[in-house]
Structure formats: C-alpha cells, structure tokens
Amino acid sequence: MTPHFLPTLVNPPFGDPGVYVDFQFARRAILFDLGEIHRLGPRKILRLSDVCISHTHIDHFIGFDLMLRIMLGRDMALRLFGPPGILSQVEHRLASYSWNLIQSYPTEFVITVTELHPDGSGVRARFSSRRVFARENVEKLRFSDGVIQEEENLRLRATFLEHSIPCLAYAFEEKLHVNFMKNHLEELGLPVGPWLSEVKRAVLRGEPDDTVITASLPGQSEGRRLTIGQLKEKVLQVVPGEKIAYVTDTAFTPDNRRRIVELARGADYLFIEAVFLNVDAERARERAHLTARQAGELAREAGAARVIPFHFSPRHLGAEDELRREVAEAFEGRGR
Image (cartoon, rainbow, N blue to C red; front, side, top):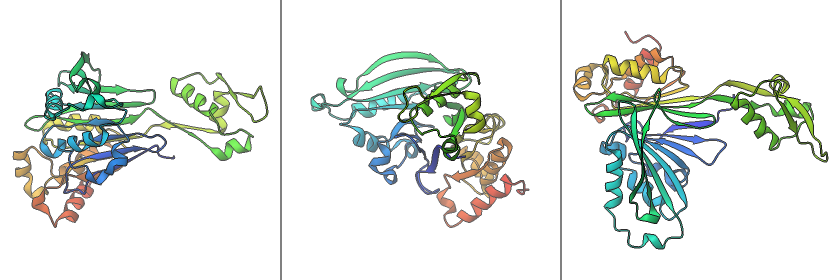
C-alpha cells in the first residue's frame, strides 16, 4: 500500500514535542503541537493547513510567533484547534504586535481558531489580517464522538486528558485508502487522467458497484464505460485508511488510559510521550506524565502497529536507549 501521509517528529525526543504530518500527494501538512519549529523550515511551515495544540505550556506553543511571521504577507488560511482558553491566547498573541501597516498588504492571512471544551462543545472564531486580526465570526459548536474536523476522506478526532490542566490528544484518520495499480491500468489500455479522480470520489462517497464511470481515451470522444465493481476487481485497491495518533502530557490514570486506548485503537503510528524511566514512576505520577513502560503498555493495549516515543525528560540524557528499550519491551509484552 502506497502511504499517503508521512508523519515525523519535529524535534529529537529530548526536544519540544511535535509531529508533522506531510501529505504525499498534496501541498498540505498538519502539525500536532507548536513548540520549537525552526527545524521544519519555511517551506514545510507554509504547507500547514491545520495545527492541533494539546495545551499551551510554553514547549507546546512557543512556535506560534515563528509560524505567524512566515505566513504573514501571503494569501493563506490556517485552522488551529486547542483547549479551553486558546481563543483568548491566540487573540492576545496577535494583539501584542503593532499592525499599523498590515492593511496595506495586498494579501489576506486568516487564522480560524476552534476552542474545544471537555463537554463536547466548542467556540470558533476568525482572525483576518485585513481587519487587523480582530476576533470575528464567532460561533458556538457541538462535536459528536470527538470528531472536530471532517472532510471527504479525512477525519480529525480529539479527546481530553488530565495533565493537571486539560490536555488534548488527537487522531488523524484517512477513512479509506484508494490506490490505482498503474500496471493493471496499462494492461487494460486505460490511461492515467482526471477520470481516476472521479472514480476515487465515487468510491469514497460509497457509490454502488454498478455505478458507471467513463474513462477518457486519447483520440476518442466517447471514452470507455466501466462500472466501479469492474474497476475494483481489476485496477483498484480499497483498504482501511491510515491512522496517526498523538498523545502527550498525560497522567497514567484509569480514565486517561481508557481515552488513549479508544483514540489510538488500531493506529498505524502512535506517537506517545515517554518522559521518565520506570524507576521514576512516582515522579511521573507527581508530574502527570507517562513512563516509558506505561507508554509501551498503552500502545500494546491500543493495538497500534508501531509506537514512536518522544518527549524524554532531560534528567535521562544519556539514557535514550534505555527509554526506548522500556517502551519496546512493554509494547511487545516483555515489560514485566
């Protein structure tokens, strides 16, 4: 299966938390957390369509200013999601600068901020450079089953975790993964072209197998008529989509454990904090963080295909291999 998304840590595991999800076949990316982001560089930052903030401790939000500086002066629209208070925090960050020249810019940069609440409600507002980033278009929202953003073939979920303050964990899901086998297209004399996008949209909409699609053929006005069922049999691969989960800054409590496992169930990639070694489990409990062993146990319980630990404590500098070993042993069921 050709992956459509490439998730990577923004920083090494002892650095600020963050995961960058690059869309392989579109000029787009999603970012989980907004700490130190210099390593991404302007080109990657400018691909961002959505930024998902877990909470606004400084190591998860300090990158806002760099992102703003790079995006300013361009026609761009960015969606930002975050916990209670995020609307005021973004508003205050924007208001901390003098914008007396911005209305002369020929471009418009818009940030749409969605503030999520533990009861499933939310508030959304828009900040536009054309109006000096004044809060506007405020609307109250209600979210079902943790789904905070839904597109034709993509879904973004969130769940609240306890970290002495509310902290969000996220899961990014591709609903279905549709691949075309080019060698089979060639065998049937079918060309690559815009008609394949029509096929993909029909499959994602759940059109029945007897739905007829016309394949455009070079030099022919009528094209070739095929059903979706024929295409599924000969040239299409339709399988469950990719899933990427992001979990950080959370206490190892029964409720948090249940929520993490539900959110990350069956994930292809689970990015999860592993702040302390198991010997420091009591310190982890006091700081409302996970140990490496706990991270591995959660990944195993969720049935994740792979686990990527991060957010290692500086007190364990020099013990990275040990942290990774504790995660791996617990993930493989060898941790006790």
